[in-house]
Length: 330
Length: 166
Image 1 (cartoon, rainbow over the protein chains, first blue to last red):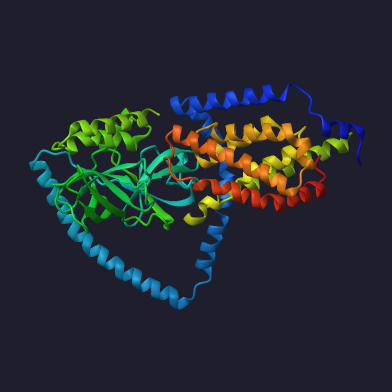
Image 2: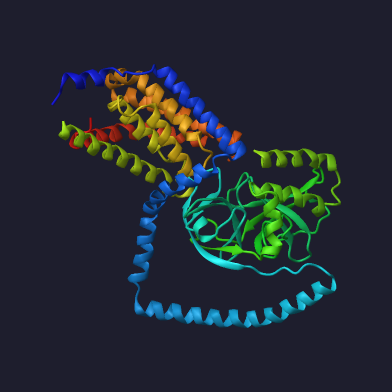
């Protein structure tokens, strides 16, 4: 049924000239981009819109959940028994290790008391699931199914069964974005488990599944196979969680620093089940009060000075610090 | 009169649904190697509706659609909104000519617009510090968008006609 009014409205657009409308909306976009990114004025708007977008994530996650459900339902009895057996064995081993750990922990806290160091209390964890990954291939971020309603906060650490994965970057009502440690803009303060050498692990710009250790001097004792644990220096991550394993160390005498590559221990590419750490309040709160946003970069910058007292060329490090600071401002 | 209003409400529902599906496709995770080949679903759907119903889906709709996409992708608010406003503006100003274009010509325009959009958003992401400058492989998305456009156009036209969206 074609009417004249239809033809009229199909052919001609009425109202304010197109150019002005486009220009107005472009300016509006620039303004909100500035307000949101530069000043964080639109936190509430983001949060509110988060309610509207939750169903999309929920629907997008259906195929994965269905396949998990299939795996759970259509599994043979023998498989279950076998799995049960292995799990029981593993539990036994883990319990034995835990018994040893208890005595070690108490011994350690006594030693710390002797040194008058602050005691690090292991935090509570909350299980979560990864329900989406960032569609931008250059940024390594994942979405988890816990949000403000579950008490998630910005800067919270995320682990999987094998090691540290990343930290919460943005909290929405029912979901949160987590910045992974392999993101090229994320710096994790680490130390070598063997000898306590400190370093900064940044997500590799070349290989998305690796970390680069920055500002490692040629004299620092690091070798392939070393375990890197979180040093707790940036006050974002809890101390002593396994982060990565060094896969290669290359020292070129013509360069100031060694090239050290490491592979994260967490199963970043394929895991779904993760844990959020609620660290004890007295160890974490001060850092969060100071700088709640863009914690990774700030953490790196704070960390750098105490970590590298023997840096041979401080003027080399200066521009990097500036970069970090401006990135933190942005 | 009342039937016309009902139809209008019904039709709006169809447009929203196509956008919803486009959002789903935009955020569904792919293997790493395939990430650069994903067509830009939301700009494609937007271009179709702007072309087909320029008096209903305009720059304001494009802006809002971009805002939702920003939230979904977790990027700075206004980033995709800006890109989609530009796409909507060019499509609106060309929509009468676009209808006369052959499929190949339309695909060419889709390639250009989506490519520009990708460049703009990538550049803005670098400025806002969300990503780092890298190679130009992300522009492959424009190519796949252009390849998929003819079938996308047929499908959406079929949907529009069967639900009588006007």
